[in-house]
Length: 113
Length: 112
Image 1 (tube, rainbow over the protein chains, first blue to last red):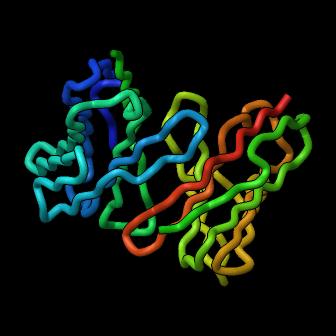
Image 2: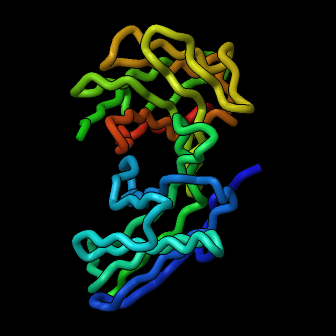
């Protein structure tokens, strides 16, 4: 079956450094990818998305990179702040069923001073 | 965007009982979803709830255990029936508007 998974379950970075969170997906036909941030006790919050016809998209302090050749997705956070501490999920909408949003396993980002 | 609220935010229940979770969206949406999130884990889709039709359940989830209602375009309920401790989890409501999918704060359920 298809899966969306992450390489690093926990990432610790120093405040001000850049963070890179990685995600691998297995469904090469997937069309749309989303990164979510989930803080403790809250639901996931949309950060940024990217379609399969793009390889890079930038937001405010965040950049998502998509490498379709190796089926890899990454989220880069510039100048990481304590408020960035959370669990980050990549999610995928497979082309065979665009109703479904499938989540990866998640990476916990810890920011220390 | 869409703002989603859930009730209750948390509950502690006895095994064998049932709990109905309510989800309210502040705008009309076509697609609503229910997810389960075990502590420290990712989100698993339970079912898709569309107004005017029966919910579509994912593998491993059945209507008898998780009946869902979708009476209109802003509201849905999920019932966790005949609960056991294995049902202890966070249950999240979600709604899609356009390409974006939003989530409620979740209902933390503990079954004793």
